[in-house]
Length: 280
Image (cartoon, rainbow, N blue to C red; front, side, top):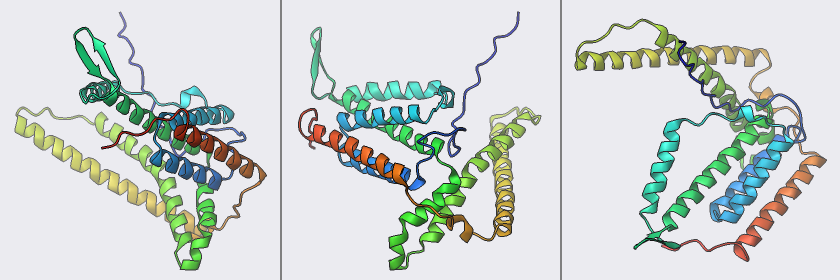
């Protein structure tokens, strides 16, 4: 009999656009950044069910328009489901309205509903960031940030330097993740001597961790040196944020749609469907 094959978990893929083109891919990067900032402000001050539902529907519609395949979504590990179940169980003990009768007991579901609302808010924000990551080229971020921060130049704020720093960080992040995964896989393939005592096993783990950190730092420095040479060969760091970047007609249309959606969600939250937040 053959041993059952273990299903390989799909990793989280961020800061890499999904191949293909769509109306969402063609939007200006600054429009997407402003959309994320505006939705973040809305959900910060009004984290109710109505704004969360509106933003969730918006994320699903954007994913549909951007042709994001289901295979892009990462696999959720079992331990995360266990943590969510424990969190929901402990939040139920907080009680609060509404209250349901279970036999001779009264159970308040206020804490559970608050936990579910915070969980839904986190999922929506993660989905919003993932949409920007999957539909935006990293090279378009720096020129967009430089264009959005142009008014700050009057205050002698180094906007271009900030834009270059953000661009380099976004470029290096996925590259370093792949490098660390390769180092970790190579480390696991190396033969290990079985330690007999607990103290020896602890020393072995500490030594393995130190070796892995030293290898990761060396790989990061090597990658940084290679990136510096590539930037110098292409004209310096100033060329990263010097590319022309400005909104077009479709960006204004998308911004208007976003304003309508957020305004409608806010109006319903404050009037008809919304519920007031609990006061402490």
